[in-house]
Amino acid sequence: MPLDPQQCRNLLDSGIDIVVQRSDVRCYTDQDYIDAGVPVTDDMSDRNILLGVKEVPIELLIENKTYFFFSHTIKAQAYNQKLLQAVVEKGIRLIDYEVLTNSKGKRVIAFGKFAGMVGAHNAIWTYGKRTQTFSLPRMKDIHDYKTAIDVYKKVDLSNLKIAITGTGRVSNGAAQVLEDMGIEKVRPIDYVTKTYDHPVFTQIGIFYYAKRKDGKEFDDMNIFYNQPELFESDFHHFLPMSDIMINGIYWDNAAPAFFTVDQMSKDEFGIKVIADVTCDIAPVSSIPSTLRASTIEDPVFGFDPTTGKETAPYQEDCIDMMTIDNLPNEMPRDASTAFGDMFIEHVLPQIKDPNSEMIQKATIAKDGDLGSHFEYLRSYLNKV
Image (cartoon, rainbow, N blue to C red; front, top):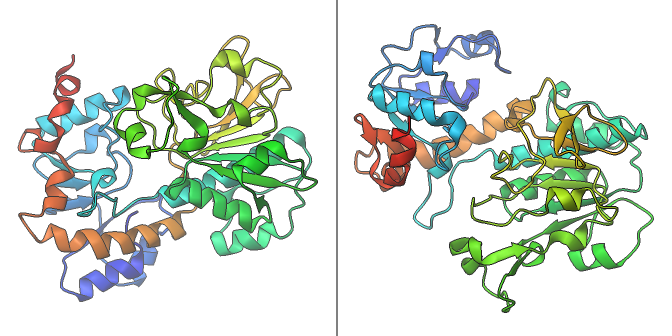
C-alpha cells in the first residue's frame, strides 16, 4: 500500500477524495483505515486515479483509468509484455513510479532503500541457515525496523566478508543494515588486501567492478552509463575472499555481468550466498545464477555451477540464491510510510498540473497507445 492510514486521513482533511480498497493481505488492515476515518470499499469504478505498488493483475485492470504502479516494462521485460498490451488495449494511462524524476533526472519516489535493507537482512539470514552458525528471524516476522535493530544486538555473527555492489539507494540501504548489525565497513582496496578477525563489508562502485575493454583509463562514470557495451567485468578481485554478495546496482542490458557460470565453478570463487536485489533474470542479467525470482514464502534456491541448473538450497557445492523481487513487502510499515511521504511531497502536486513534465515523462501508456517517451517499446508492445 503506497499510503498508510494517517496519510490517507491527512489527505481527506486537505479536501482530497480518497478511498481504500478492501484487502486481507495488507500490513495495515481495513480496520486500521476505518479507525482513521478513511472509507474502505470493494468498488473502485468511480475513482479517477488508482494507486498501487506491484503490477495489477490483467483481469483486474479497469478501462480508461489512470494507474500508478511499478509496471516492470521499461526494459521490455518479457514476463510483463501482456500487461503492457492489456494496458494499451484498455485505454489506461499508466504512470510508472520508476521513471518519476525531478528536473535533474533523479527519481523522486522509490522503494530502493527498503529493498536493500531487506536484501541485506535476508543475505545474512540465508548464510545463517546455510552454516548453522547463528540464527536470525525473517524480516517479515519482525514488526518494524526499530524492532529489528534490537534483534541485531543479540545476534553473534561469524567472521564474514560481504561485498555490496552499487552506491545508490539499494546498496546504501543494505549498508545501513550491515552497520546496524555491527559489521565494519572497509574500503574496497583494504577488503581485498587485508585480513580481518571480525565481520566486515565493502561497498563496490563502478570503478572497482568494471573496466574498459580497450584498456584505456576509466575515469568518467558517464561513459559507462552511456556506453556500457564498451566495458567488461573487473569483479574477479572480490571473488576469492567474499562469503556473501549483495547485488544492489541498476543494471543496463548492455553492461557486463559480474562473472560467468564457469567462474562460479572454480575454486577461487568463494561466494556462498548471493542476495540479488537487482533481480534481472538470466541470461540477460548481471548475475548468471539468477534463474528466477524467488518468493517471500520460499526465499532461497540453490544453484549448481557445474550444471548451471537450480538445486535445493544449502548444499555444500552449490551457491544459495536469494532473489525475491518484492523485498520491501517484508518491512511494509516502514516502507509504506516512507513511500507515502515521497509521493505526497513530490508527486501529488504534479498530478494537479495537466502539463506536468514529470508526469508526462513517466507516462508509459495513454489513450490506447504508448506515451511519447516510450516509443522505444513499440516492437515489445506489438510482438505476438
